[in-house]
Length: 247
Ligand SMILES: NC(=O)c1ccc[n+]([C@@H]2O[C@H](COP(=O)([O-])OP(=O)(O)OC[C@H]3O[C@@H](n4cnc5c(N)ncnc54)[C@H](O)[C@@H]3O)[C@@H](O)[C@H]2O)c1
Image (cartoon, rainbow, N blue to C red; front, side):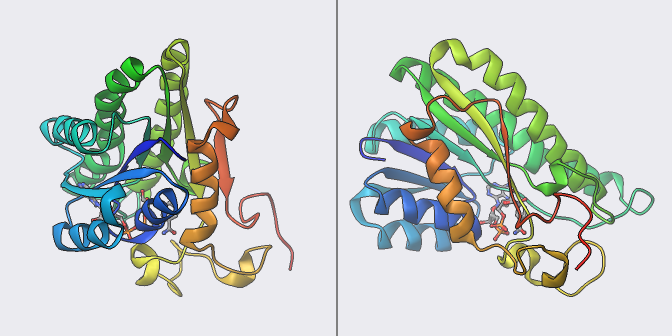
């Protein structure tokens, strides 16, 4: 990651913070963007000169332009972007309200669109880059009680492919990552509930994922070692969606 500057949305906590820490550990620089300003600032300070924080609401185009400008000014032009910010509002097809639907699509889908759009120009100028869009296994199969979330995460997978085709001529790779249940604040409240979250017994590898499991994959996709990988979906779920599991 040496010489690379990466913007991580939703980087203040959870998986985003694991990506930010690993990027710096591996010699890169990171701009952490989040609506959680206290947590984000603290994390950036703890990572030293190689990290900065910017207040970023991914649903706002102006915030994205500020983030790209801040990265370029303080850390170097961005060559990496992890579109990680996301929300999970549970609800079935019939119980999901218009407001819930719109909020989920705004953050999880429009946020990824605006992030890619804002970063693409800077990456073109730098001669290339790598964009990693965090989808979910809910972007590979259907989930119950997560109707708008599932819709948004399939959209991330589709946008990834369209962007990979359009940006390939500029040396910009775009991939999607599809974690299964991973222990962060997002699912902490849902563990043990029916519906949204599996139990370890339902996961062939026998445990939930951790942020550091997913960080290994994201770092690989950001690095030059993955230079011929683009437009692909990368599932990381302990084989939970591989097929019927008769334990
Ligand atoms: N935890 C899981 O089991 C799991 C599984 C699959 C996919 N994911 C995806 O991984 C990503 C990270 O999830 P997590 O588990 O670390 O969740 P988390 O709730 O711990 O972290 C999400 C981060 O996104 C930020 N965020 C929310 N709305 C934002 C906005 N409008 N603008 C900027 N930042 C915003 C939050 O403040 C938070 O820091 C999400 O996209 C999520 O959908 C999570």
